[in-house]
Image (tube, rainbow, N blue to C red; front, side, top):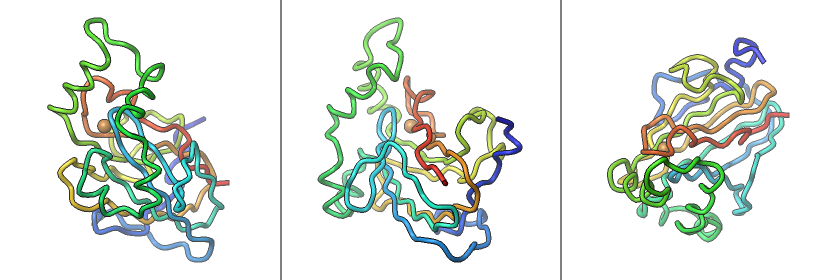
Length: 194
Ligand SMILES: [Cu+2]
């Protein structure tokens, strides 16, 4: 699919973290809240009741509040609703999810790379962009939510409101170098606007 035809499907309604990246509210539609946790090297997404989502299907016109956090940010995790805290897989479970998704390194093990990343590159970010686009294209090209920082030392989640103004599949992607598995850190089709 052409990048140009999939551009700017969701406009950002506004966020304290995204000054300067504001669009006009579309009005109407449902309100949906989603939680997105970033780990080395992927994202876990939940609905408000703590149900894990491979993909969140939202109606066109919905207002999506995205609450994003670093799963390693203990202070942030403590502020989350109990349903989300309890649904969050433990670090070992998240690490197992890397198997098969992240190719093993030529030297050493995935686990060693993970430990190194945890130590040296503890931070992530979250950008939302049309699925199938060129994720390495830098800012602009088809991105519908510019990256919000998800540092491990944060004390509150990053909360962003998005307007699901166009149909399509959208991918969560980390735009902050976070070690060996960084290039594989995305959740393809995390939001589907139907
Ligand atoms: Cu990352």
